[in-house]
Image (cartoon, rainbow, N blue to C red; front, side, top):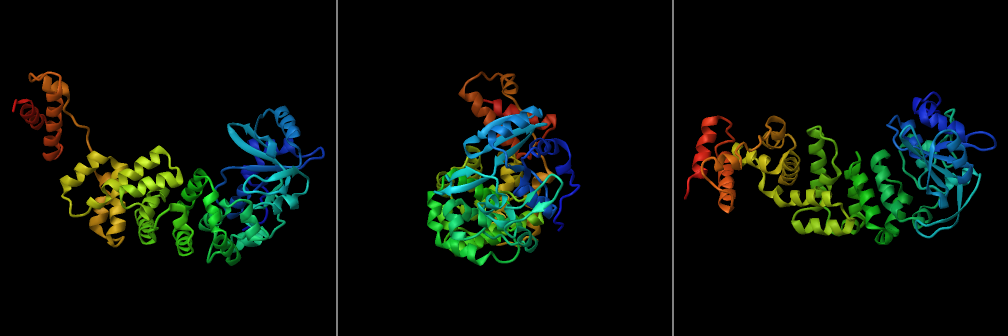
Length: 411
């Protein structure tokens, strides 16, 4: 890992380079801070880019507007201005130091001390900064921790956590993404000691952190430590099933599927419909997320290799590819079958081998045989669909004609 980002295209070109040039100089200094620096040093994709500056918000707005950027005062009372250029948003925040801290609502004053600004952040590997020429500044030992893949609180872990209890979940989330080996012992001890603070957090913030954690490469190991130390059950308001989420992660890897946080959440905490309702309330899931978990809970237990080929295709037709895969993987994870099990693999990969056709018979086909609009027509259409499915989804005219004639015949 190099400790210099000189020549990095994302830093030296485009809107970011122009923005840094506008903010840097004439008595002020600007640097890229946080996750973008961390990821770039690790050779991982850089997504959100945050900038810290000695310039106060009013000066930031003045400079970036003159340079052709759009300035949006999204958090100006805390020193943050969102700057948009070439369709990309950048959060620009004036250097700060805490005067009082109470939860996530710290009282701050603006400053010009880069070391003090770094020391108020959460973890050492998130406190690195890079000037526009690529030089790295490290005031808290972040480079050494990044090299060792160690997630460590800055200063006293208990103090950092008391400033914002979400940092308990962030500790596990960042370790799951970037850490190697065991978790930092003082940090873990502080998380356990202060775990009741999780109850003070908004459900939306907890949901966001948990979904990010569940998508991480090291999610299972982090979840296991959380479960063993009384943290995970508090978050999901239930008994976590580490065995099943472990199996789900292995299946995703075996089938070369991207880690799916919601599917993993289902494996971890959903067995019956009541579990979904509990998670919906506890984590403030979106309606889409709730519907997906409800679909998983509804049928994972009845899907398995014992189903006939037509029964499998019928389920795929009824559920759609996404929900079919969710149910199949959860059923597989809970079956105890090995990840190499060929029958389960054949079932789970059915959507890759067969695309369910659209039902080809319309109400007009039945009306052409003398039926009129009304409840009887709807029932006849349902009967025709059931007969079509039972016949193996035929598409030839003769088979369809027979199904239509039978459905339209008065009983």
